[in-house]
Length: 120
Image (cartoon, rainbow, N blue to C red; front, side, top):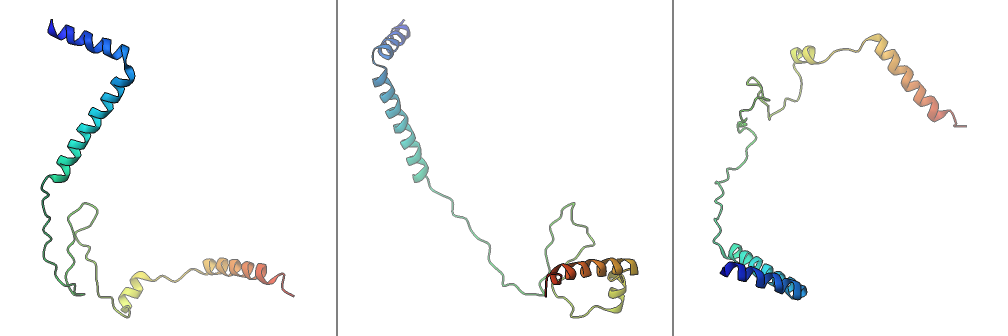
């Protein structure tokens, strides 16, 4: 019974003064939002502890994380050689075919003719 009376009074107040009810709702919302923000701002924050930093050296081993994308036999090298060995050159360098070289020469000649064609 008491809840029905309260419900009726609120409904009656909402129909008689909707602007005042809207203002009251906004004030209550802002008050609750302010309390929540104040609680968040004043709560103690955990300080993050950074691990000790080690100076970087070029010879330090690389720590490769375990993942399915990285093969286990793959080890990156930080120190590069100044010159390829003959075995590496034979493994990685392939000489272009004559037909490919002729096509490249024609393409380059075409570009040169386009550039110098309008020259006096």
